[in-house]
Length: 405
Image (cartoon, rainbow, N blue to C red; front, top):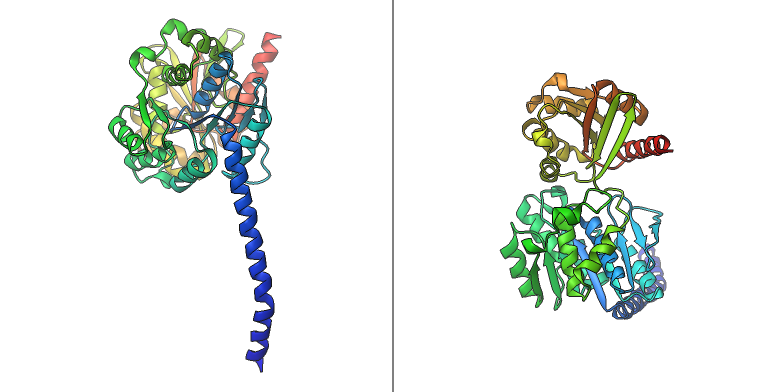
């Protein structure tokens, strides 16, 4: 009797479930067709990927194209997702839940609504499978960009650098073009690009801006980022000089490297924000790029923002500062600061140079930095821009503006 009742219930419910499934599939199919139609209305679609510099390169390309008269919309993910409209104005991307690659669909619709001829969009996926899906289903780029390949997010793309390169290659377009500044994986990227019927372009040394050209940026930009952005703009018909003029006026991403100076009496603090360059290789690169490895008698400190969900990265950073980032002192803020100090000590950092301030406010940390400053101290921020990092950078900017006024 029970079996008969279950069978009747099954046959009564089954048609409803079947109808529901058909409706879901139909809605999905319509959405796909609509999105493909939207993509066709944007002739230039540029998908920017890489370990570091994605947000900066996205902004630089968009600014260069706008300066050349190309109606352009851009979207960064980076430290704070941002939609850059055709007129260059910006607004944050509002999320009601965790980031999802489906938000790229609404960005494409916005670009079409604004009459954009070019869309420059930063890859927001980390998992290799989602990077492929983003490129194939959501962006279908005509131009791909890979800034560099560095050991980051190994928990998702690893276990090693070769796998990171494979993951990033998932956004190489089919029958389009790929621009790259990465030389370590040059042969691999060229081979993958040719397999997809696309043309490969490596940013040549002569394309990299000169020191004089870089001086006009109002923040610290990496020459390779500008070089690859210029390559893309010139390929799309924008003259180098005109593209550069547009790039000089770009609003830097919140995670961009910036230099902030604060004076209190006879003490001067120079804070260099490299918090977003948060893999060990990029940290060492910036340390050397800024010339801090040759600081001599100049007082140099390091502020480390530690994150509880980046424990593997924390261990790597601890090893790096023990061997490469040699400073006078290290203040550790953020999550599990005491744990980080313990790891750093075991990797060779002198315990007397480590200052744990994990539960302290940005004001308290700033006061401690000035207490450690003898006359002029340069402090490099590393680790992560999230949480405490963003609050500290905001606090510095408030003091700078108050001093300037």
